[in-house]
Image (cartoon, rainbow, N blue to C red; front, side, top):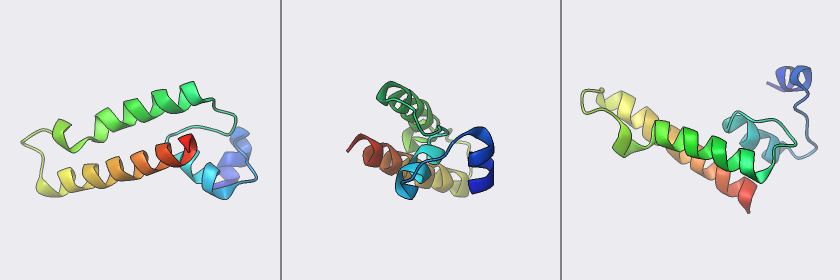
Length: 79
């Protein structure tokens, strides 16, 4: 991930911030507007209530875990 980030110009001195930005699909230098937009997009995609009823229990559990990870990343960036 680090090599890919450097190739894309996504480098930051703070590894926690870099991890949170990667979780949202963003690079260092993303402003609060971009962070919020990426969070909303991913939160809607992975929200447990938005998963189809026909999806497997495992798929719904993965989506719920991803939703928690995305929410944690967003909150750490907005803190």
